[in-house]
Length: 209
Ligand code: TYD
Image (cartoon, rainbow, N blue to C red):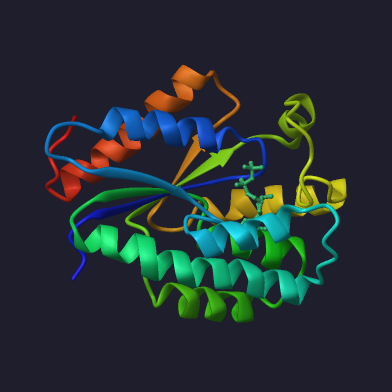
């Protein structure tokens, strides 16, 4: 049975999730508490290989194939990393999880949302995050934040990106989900993330930091 805590950070590309995930891990870590940071697609040897295929601009991938690749990476990651960590009482923070598939492959690619939901459930074996934090940013932030080079997903048309962005705004109002305005400064965003996580720790009897 699950004893740890499962926190997921979600949001459009370049919303600053990865920076915030590392800051959250550093804030949470402390004596007697094991905190693990992981990501999707990725998190295991096999899943990182799948990530490389998915993000390679040279890969030609149809929407359905793309969906299965993300779910394959997730099944391995859930079984080999997330579930054992939770069983051992760890706090696990994942940079993306099932909501990404709903936003990108469901709303973005236009695949049937029920099918996406079913595959999400199969790949996770029904595991749900204790808290999902959605980083909400206007699309102009994507254009302003230059990065190391574009991967296959970042090279998608602006219309795809806008669909994903709108999807996140919608998904952020679901139960168990906290929306954070990620257009603010790094410190402000971190402090909002901390309050959401502190509330979860109190609720689950983990003791705050
Ligand atoms: P991410 O790790 O956020 O990329 P980066 O480190 O470059 O910011 O995610 C990789 C890409 O994969 C991102 O564009 C979102 C996409 N993605 C999906 O389309 N579906 C999914 O299920 C997941 C987990 C990610």
